[in-house]
Image (cartoon, rainbow, N blue to C red):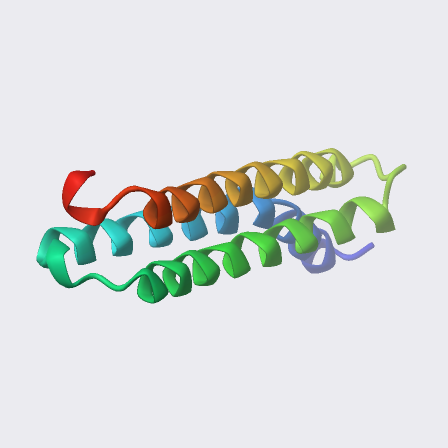
Length: 112
């Protein structure tokens, strides 16, 4: 395996961690910003759209990491291990995004 291919695999393996955290941060910060801007006029549809966008980013990262794990379970470079933990981390970040999105639908924005 070439060095550039190995670096690409390791980068893809870390995608679950990096994109999952980025999706959660994006979802959290955008929804907090909208509520802080004007809580009386925040639409639940906007909150769901923000949550969906963050969830898609986290899912993309988890799938990239999962692909690395599936392709190379016996590779000595450790990318498979990072890939499986990245896939699990992406799933955990997805769960956090879903819980935050659900709470935005349940709790009125001005009371949070």
